[in-house]
Length: 145
Image (tube, rainbow, N blue to C red):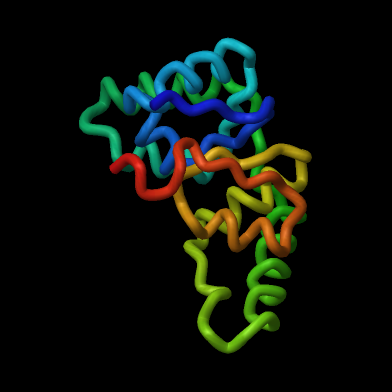
């Protein structure tokens, strides 16, 4: 079953990149890329480069990310990320403020630019409760690996 998303722009999280070639996602990914709706963030680029198999794939991914619009990580983004964690912590003592550091930075970078986040990670739904960005699953939760 193919997925569709609202129009972007979308900061593509590492979890979305990892599923871009899945048959349920591939057509929507290609369409979003063709419409220039995908956005890179240095945090995601670093995660992708870290996971690359070899120098050739590092260069391929670095080039692909560099060709996209960017959601940079600035001092304002880091301040916003810290405030988001504080707001999540104030919401309860259940540990729900414990989101991955890369996720909160990506969400804050997207929010600063008025972008959404395309992902396959429940943390972004939680972060969207305290940051002004659209949280868009690349596919419904639990439907792909």
